[in-house]
Image 1 (cartoon, rainbow, N blue to C red):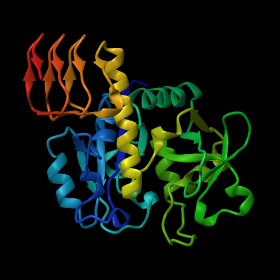
Image 2: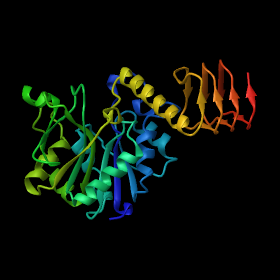
Image 3: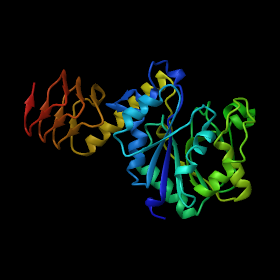
Image 4: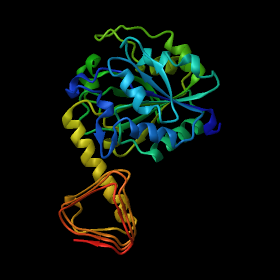
Length: 314
């Protein structure tokens, strides 16, 4: 398989009730971009055949409007009947011989390299389904992974439906999956809303495919923060803090000096040249470009500004 056989489905429907906002949480600005832009751009980095955003609910039009400039397709989920129902809506635009990567739209911290390794793992295992998992220090609210042997999965148990012994499991479902399309859509026909939420769970497909095909695997990663979903303002802030750490770590490795990186804010589209020096209490916003060996003194806010090589701003 090449990545041209890959289709990516991003779940972007919903009401964003818990975020307490007039607009979709997926459009909230996170380090200079809409939250949904991060998983979308990570998906596009794989050069798949198609990236599909499943939209619906009161924010459907605003999401379509914002992301119409991206190379993506849109599929509507008219009623919020769960993740399984959302994926069912994409069947008409995904060929049977495709491999399908499914991911939530509210997980902005997933790394492009992680998605690439996940898809490669799935291909090398000749899997029918592969789930990205991680051990989480606080697994409350997440589906728990019930393992078979080695990397194989028996089932996923949702928090609301879990028994106490299952809630004690720390390995959790990231909400990021890879499936073989034909087997996925066959299994989706057999899931039922037999749960407290009365929804069609995509997670039920794992148990069905495990029973029928056996080739259902877990791909476990180390950093649980990568799969953090944003459902509340507190989680949004946690995501922003982690993203700032990653952005500054990137530029440190590129040869940039921060006098105190804790006191600098940098948005994701900013570019900084080698040997530039950034003093505390600096905010670099938008598409700001800082040249090599430039110096940005303290207490500066630069938005869409170009600073020349060697220039000093004090």
